[in-house]
Image (tube, rainbow, N blue to C red; front, side, top):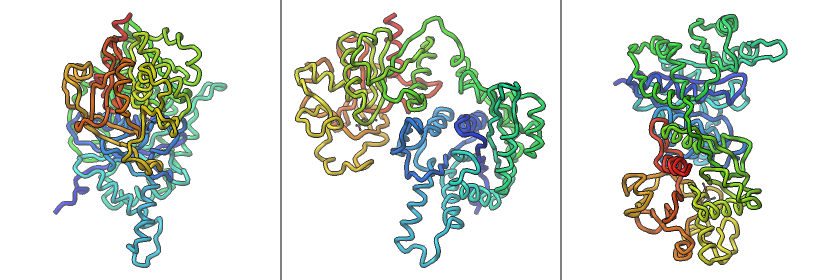
Length: 534
Ligand code: GLN
């Protein structure tokens, strides 16, 4: 019997020179041009750092923590894959070195190695190869992206695993794409290929010759630079793919298409070269790069203000909804720690959004901003913490002057947002989190039910605290009604204001389910309300 990997093809995507130059977008776009040819594509992100999951990483440093439907907490590249491939991923797409080490050490403690020495090779490398096969199962082409850059101290064993994997299943069933950054030197006004040359040498030192080089640059690559990269990389010139900055990331699949990357990949992999259906990408790229007459200003009340990656999926969801409503989006960061003193400055925005968050810093500012939006008929969308602060603002307005959340004050007697009795005592990091898909039933006739166009929905979650229903009357008196609950009626999933142009908040993270060609109804609702208010 054929083993699945004897039919499946594998594309390894690694990076050199710098990380954070768009390797994830490139990998996702490669998937998109293959999917446009009817191939079934699966993806996997390998991380070399020692964390067991991405849930504990500081978003200011590492960017958004993306959550899959099965509750896996992983870095934002999985979000690119979901948006570009319109799929929903699971834990099988997330291979973190910390988790693999933990499992190996646990197996050693359990005596599973029968006295053998447990080593990086073969134990870690075998574990990685098994995960690659498992993650790719069922697809025609499996894309594996390695985080960081080749040569990083921690990723050495991954490179060895990839090399062994390719040797085992046949080099003609595998492609290595190396994404490099080509810097531009302002003083001499030239693109420098030396770092790229060194990065290609790093890759070769692991016994891997690249098949395709993606050359990221801030300025167009000259023919001379392309030739140099081709020569030093040992790849044909047509396999050096210039990837200049794009106006929108959603143009990258079209860039790859123009440069015939799919044909190159398919030929190398011995797969039939079919014509693609790129209509969806023509349409998305057109919408994403157009200028519209009307501009909507959205103020995002947040505490991490210097790294847009922190709220990546939220921003993508807003942008996507804006093009679909044919308006330009201008978003501004509103400093949650300062806004309380200057609430009327929120008037400069057409809509207010409070995204998810953890900890106490800036929370009072978020509560004040939500309360202000409620009082001043300003379109408001609250996501997760954005619901909790809205509920606290309403409870305060409804008469519970000290209303707060257990996260802010765990001794308070007025916890409108609390840790449910069933969660008590399990507060250790990660232990009590509600993660991944949960169903909700939306109230008949509610604004959310109208927006979703149905009353049974599923959204992803990532939070610990819940609305305390003992305060339901106060919250209602303060202006908010509960418009969505868990199917058993226990948990509050949505709240909304009745006499307000648009004030909706959800305990979930709908931003993870927006797609470039399918905006999420809550974001569309916010943008529409903002547009109508102009
Ligand atoms: N910190 C809040 C909680 O744990 C909200 C979490 C979030 O916004 N993702 O419940």
